[in-house]
Image (cartoon, rainbow, N blue to C red):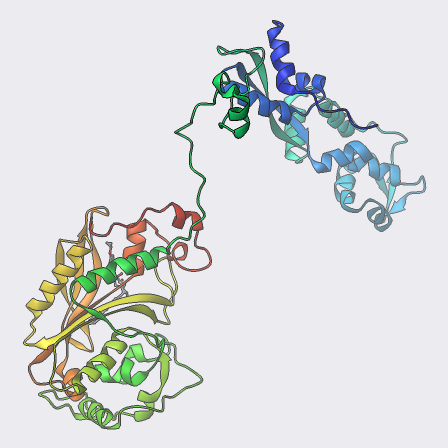
Length: 497
Ligand code: FB9
């Protein structure tokens, strides 16, 4: 029998209301029309939006049976199923467990509690029936609830505790004429079509108002990862300050450029595998600049250029060890050495922003890798004052105007300073980086002219990005757990504004 066409719910409802009667319960009205409550709900929503109909929400919380409880209504309570499964001569627990499956345990417990079953002296395995017929109180309680009857609080609590019932909120509507009620809603035209023009009925038909408040279709566009957004902003600061980018496209570096060329002694703690990822294959680098290497060896072993060096036995094989660079300062070393080979010397401003790797304990703000931002200026007669001046410029462009400097130590810079900025939002001084003047033991073996100094500083990309985006766990910023909505909903970071 072809299912009968679903009635024009709107027309029926408007006619019904127009006849003066109201709709106290949208559920029964929907079933009277033979349509789903959902279908009626959509019509109600649309008519209420135009205040043609006034709908009042009616909510009711009812107890509904869980999956498990519906099983007991169908097959009896566990205790009832157990007793029904025990033959007059009794049955062993295994047999009963086999028969009853998951309800066995609870069945045993409750039937025993109800003294419906017992055991023979000395044979704890044979389960005996103690009653002929039983009243399955639980099944009846569940049936009564299922049919909407009420139950005592004790019963409700007991069933709740046994996770056999749960609260369900159902909502329906009481309907009556709205202030804009009409018996038949005029279909408002939404467009002047050829048909309207040809038939000329555009003169009298009513057009739907434009809804200038309507949200546009969300356009599916790509979003810039916050780290890359801040990277670009910081890159623009460097470019505006006349810096050019250093090539950082080599995560794998030799200990020579990462440590030795920086006058970092071979037994320095940062050079053991607790802090640094060394490579198994290729374990050692083949190409190091021989003559320069000799000078590095010399300055480590016995100094020179006014330095007494470290006075230890410098090993080439140690310097040849390959690793994942621990800082982009390794790239600065390569660039300064290259610069030193270019005669005559020309001052330079370089920056780098790229990944560095440290075998560190991972926590809320630290991963085994982060993006280091580094800036350096190489020129005659540069002083610590110049460094402080450049840091003021750089960080003020990042919106950090109040800076303080704390003496620090790096193997490759003397003097060195930790940089602190007062962060208005966090109402505290935040460590925003490290800096210093590269040691002559690093610069002169490269062949840089006497009197040429190099001021440099570094910070991370993750920290400013986390603070600017209000992200407190680095896993929310980097890696598989990044929440796209955070990226989509986050405004463009306005650095320094
Ligand atoms: O980024 C860091 N802090 C920071 C930076 C900006 C910022 O902006 C906010 C919007 C307001 C907030 C915070 N730091 C450096 C300081 C700390 O986070 C520090 O605990 C962690 N540091 C990393 C290294 O951790 C082992 C940040 C990383 C760092 C530290 C030093 C250098 C580079 C990165 C360097 C250097 C250097 C020194 C001399 C010469 C050349 C390079």
